[in-house]
Image (cartoon, rainbow, N blue to C red; front, side, top):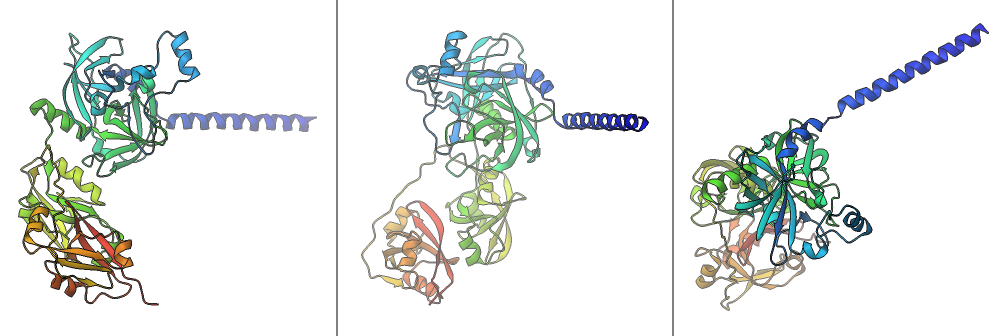
Length: 489
């Protein structure tokens, strides 16, 4: 009997210890997770709901998206109808109203009523209103916008001091850090969502805000979150929620925010002079591809390959040439070509910055005076007419070339004695690389080409299995194209 009692007591003790351990484990786990309530209570009053009205169909979108997505707007469904019937107000405008309405978020950056949001929320709007947490609705004036950074500055007159957010330093963010968003997805005001920083310095391509290195997170944001703040655990704004990657138009786990230092740089310029100026280096560049790595005998694909230099630009005056590989800009190493435009764009025009390049296998440091980028850069696309002449070619590369006349060079913006033009695509190597008749060849393996004879000399020793790198101009665009010569069988 005593043994049974002892066994029972022992089991109870063990169970008790296990229970204590489980509670301690739960307490430890809970203690390790952040509590966002303080951040929300402090900052929610400074977050606003933005509504833009249009006389025609809206020009802006509720949320910028990347990926294959259908049209914007919340679909008609029973749940949406339930909200309309039982709560007396729509969570989102009706399909007809959506044609004339854009919803977004924003946040107050100064107590006198300046508000930051996305340009695509208010772009071309006839009227803009903001709703505060205390349910006041105020008419907002669009002070200025910058489509390139997707930033808009609004101003409201609230008749008194307004609550504001605290601004942080987005440059100190690291992948894995907790972040928090407050906004109005689908019209649900002051929705709080959280996640972590997935990546920093994310560039979305030359056609999508090339001057912005985005903060990528897994924070759930949807249509209506655009322009809302992204907070760190100290309750400071580190980003402006702007885009998602989606196949449906709604959140799929990948969100992008504009770094707050980029956004505030734009805000200060808009407030002081009405527009945003950006630095301009004066080069056209492309990623350092595998073909470039192989042809130039590089260690890796870091940096930006210069394919063209604008005459009279800071880069041209400093001596940067087509074929150079830019390794660093103003002391910052370039991991990829997309790293360069944001750095240059944030440089104050007139500044002198060191640029490290690789040319003929040797590093050089050049000092470049950064110029101001034009606010309306319209590319000129002149193919030009080719003067009939005898054609010479390379059987290994599968193409023929002919001289360029001075008129065509002038139309293409080339200097005298620069380039030869492709006459025919005569073989599979050039065809598979995407070359076309009328393309202008400017360089062969970093060697400048200005005549048919120079082209023939540069390609004479091409061997099977080797890669030849051509710098090719098509219209007003230049790019490096690698041609790999098949090995003999």
